Length: 433
Ligand SMILES: [Zn+2]
Image 1 (cartoon, rainbow, N blue to C red):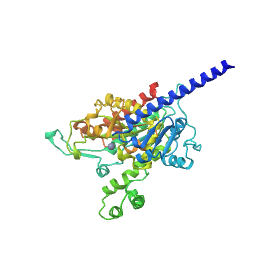
Image 2: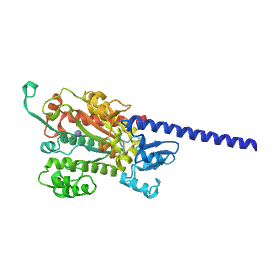
Image 3: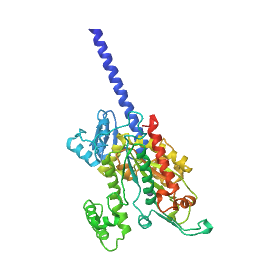
């Protein structure tokens, strides 16, 4: 009997040691994750704690001292929580948490019925994958490109090697890239979802229609939420506010939030966000630059002022607990390698742009940077946010200026190809699933 009790005691000690070791390794892993990827200025320790119980968030460092917890997930439940973030919106997750004080979520089906993953061969490479594609910006023509300030116009300047005037609207390039990528992904069995289709923005209407139907209501709602003062509201609704002001001050952020909302509803395996870059030092972009780089962004790199609201703290919490960030880094690493190989343009080092060393954190993958942009923060899936080549580089500008139907543009086709190859590399490499 004594012998038996000893065995039981031995097993108990062994199991609790293993459990303790497991908890210790989790504490170490998540502490390093915050330091490396989420806390850009090493100034956020007052907002979170990672200890033997689990991960806690606090609304302020004062609340942390008083142990007044805003969100908490235990080590026992954190896998369940991470899984649920792919089904529920931030608002739903926050509400459920406050209703029940713990993460016990009601069951809900995936939006499109049964969710399948690749299983038997010989399925096509991307069979069963759900991929969301977001074509950056909204322009379908140069006028809208100019209005959203994503437009390049270079006049004839033979001294600089420009013999015909050149013009590019980034929104037209991203849209064409998204269309070409969608065809490639679907040809290999993937299901895709696009945030903007048929020349319309994520609200499913044109910007002009949005102004007529929703602008005034949107300004009023934002005023009621405290985003605008009465004076700002009156100015925005008055005759002095230009279309460009209405776009920048009201529409832009609402439309980005809509993109994230419809992507999250689709519940993708991962999301591809497509942008083309410019040289930040080349203001106005009406003359060429000699610089040219590729890079990709993932979520993270929060600054101190970035945790001012409960929603933002929840986004930080969600990025910390789920493995979306780790998967985003792998996916983005695979894609940025293909940008360099396919486009023959170098991957940016952190010293190659001011916003990289000032606003980003490097990751284990070259050319993949944590940056607290809206979409990487809002989207509940792994992402790759691509910024390929500099449109204002002289040779790129000339290449991108070709063809009025940008799906026929050779350089755009190469960019779509690079995304596609990177995605396939990410999926077929066993360690990167
Ligand atoms: Zn862009």
